[in-house]
Image 1: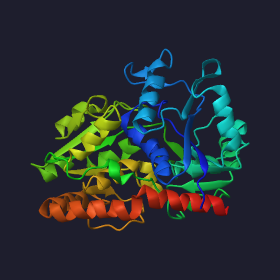
Image 2: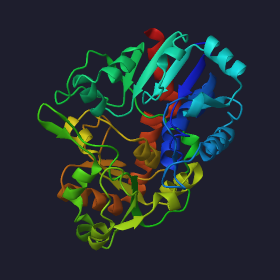
Image 3: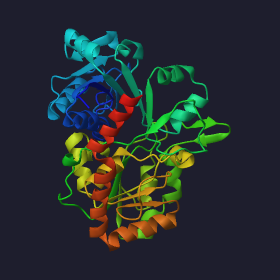
Image 4: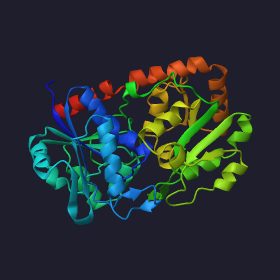
Length: 382
């Protein structure tokens, strides 16, 4: 296929945090590596979050500076545009250059449905929606949230991180094509030194639970209660959480520490692109639960964070969400606390094997060259 001019959207400036950055930045890096002509646009219509202030910033100065540095770091220093919600102020590319890109682009990849004014991008021949929050996306549509439905419907093709059909999740009338997070393997370094610690990076809560037909779909705080006694069961293994304060419900730091969890502040250990990577690479392995909604919906969601651990050669022990990936070597899943204990012990007993298997899974299933080539082929065939 001939190279395409592609516009990628995201929330790198909106939430200038290490993990969020990796969620979005591997798309433009990977597409550029495939030879495509790539640009990054951010136009969420939201007031940006400033981690230094712990909330919404007074303006967008910090956010624009962060985005500019990230784009320079990945070789797209003159190929980005950011719109600040206040009076529609644009930063990055000039108005004329931005208009020329939109008028000549072949494909727009709308990650997480972040564009606030999709009609202004309709001049691009093909718009692709990437559902990064399966189960919650489908339930919002089934509940009849018309503004959200209108946004989703305006796209020509729909992809989802929910890689399997689940009867536990309502139909929406859309053809959700399975995709997964692309990982730029060259960015992740298995040879880096590691601590003897299982870690993860997490939000305690992200937004309010949602209810559909009498069933509630919540967040990690709900699932974590079932595993809160885990450190005692795997001692002296160290279990560390880089966990924030919680957006809806406050993170119970004192209770977590009382139960034997080590807690660290993500703003200290992984505030940006490179520190986030260093935190993952410094870990022995990952242990993590999933959002309650992902567990209830069983659509096969798998996180970018866990895929990055795999790429770094760090085994991953995660809660089962109906994964379609091979498990047992490098990637181990659990449903109960007893299974979690067993899987942690399995990793420790044959670490070299599981470490190599982790990287192999990343190479076979998350390599950005493979994931993005398939996504582009699917979009072109629509």
